[in-house]
Length: 331
Image: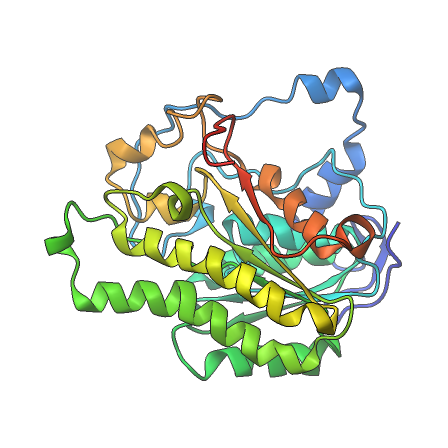
């Protein structure tokens, strides 16, 4: 089990136990305590299938308002100290994939900083509570990744609060469906690129002076960066750029002993899509996969643990790992 230590918010006396009651922390910790996986139980895990309830949110969207709530607690996942003593910074860590990754990193022994937009503060508080329920320190940093100054700010605040940096997860993303090329404005194109690829570049550049041999950078790609998407021209282009950036940066940093990899999922149940698509399209999201449903964030997060952990992936860099729900053409 990861070593427990004090946080600025509460003292952890054991898994899920603290001197101050917190509903989110207690719910997450209770899930971890009561899970006793067996082969039979794991074989019967039930995930929500499409169609989902038709729904739409204003951007950027909140996980707390999504129905059904995305699954991020991973109650059958047992930590084994793979990231003990590490510190991770996760952009877009308030919800979706980023939140699930933050929880598993904490369960493996890492302290975690997350970034989020100011409008996502309520989701960020829930994520911080869940990290602390795992017995680790956490910090939420509000800001916009498109602001050229924000990456340096996020890195400095992480160092000031948590003392060092070992792992960067570039995960923040922006997408907006459009029917045709003529519908994409220069402003939309700029925002998508400044979030999805400029943001990754600037975060990597800001964190690099503090990384050392054994550190890791993990980027979040997408199946759209491999197959394209006719209504996500700008988003798909940025995801393809992320894949190429991953491979190139891996080559560039290999002599420093810093590994760079990418997780490229298919459809995942997060606020990103509910805040973009019409309600009727959200209901069918992921239905065209062989699994007939979108992935849950807790199903994607272990891939990030794999890439973050030297124990698991010390010989792996420059890889694009696809998680496509049974699709094999892009693998």
